[in-house]
Image (cartoon, rainbow, N blue to C red; front, side):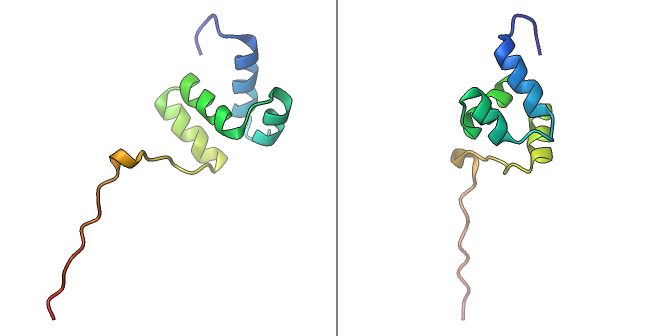
Length: 78
């Protein structure tokens, strides 16, 4: 993380990086939803660090719908 970061944001990120602190505890302490914490982490961490953090936390991977390829339906001749 760079300089000039709000100390409150830095504390949230530090707590979230500790895998032993539940997101619910952070949410209760700072008045943020889990989704807001995840969004904050995405903004503050590098893409690789964010991906590893989500994996460690057991959070689902997010794929934008626009990135999903439409499924092709095959027609089988009978």
